Length: 338
Image 1 (cartoon, rainbow, N blue to C red):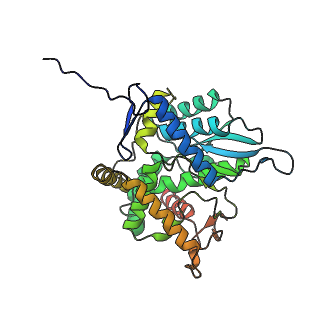
Image 2: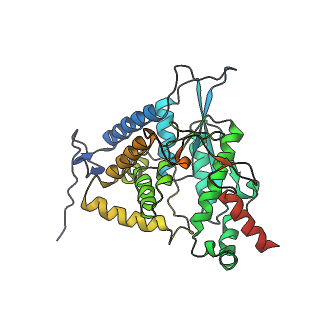
Image 3: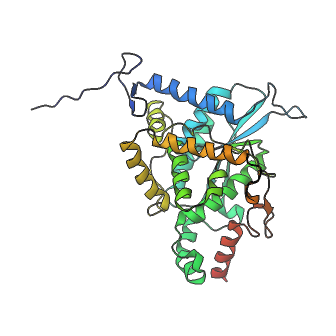
């Protein structure tokens, strides 16, 4: 006996729906999903990016936004939306940047997707590698982790993502400096943001929550402020849009990601969202409320004050510690190779 599959119609037209927004109750076709995402991204951009009518610098050059792309769906949709919303402005230049961590079988194909995406929009594409930054390739770092754990108790139990996240941030900062970026756009979606909040709440690290992007309202001197235009768009909707728009995206997951704390919180949060649609939105709204309370406080903790950061004693980059985490990891790796 054959079983028929009923396809729900779009809540706004008669076309077949490609996504069900459980939190809103709406079913959306590809066209209305695109309009919905663009509306949210446009609103978020207005809140995070205070673009004057003419954003050129004193020399008449356009202001540069470094769009951090990886070949994945999130950064592909990020770039697609930025091109559609502000790509025609002559006073703003979008420059694509990608960090090559050195992960065999993973980064090369995703890098090609990123390059193809940038070239499809006739945009400048910049790449930086871990060795260029003075770090080892990520595959080599993973091999060295057991020895680092033997030498340093704080390294025991650390996952590859802990090292990679620190080095990637350094890579993005270096790319922003290389291209002279005024802002840096990241592809963090609603799920990513809610996961970060949940992770930091679980560890009692409120200061890390405060420091989550966007940073345009409290930039750190020496760093391009980060904007996150997709922070109100769930991952499912981004994936559906990317497939429907036929964007060049790499589908494989990083081979070093399994076991990471974020992956566990991702599963927990998915269960919470399924049981109580809108949970992720609520977490992000809570973060914004905490930030607002903090910013209006007469006596916030010293380390929460905007714009204040120490300089790393080793590399001189902004850091909340005397020696930044990247330099600490670099020292651990150097000890092994001696």
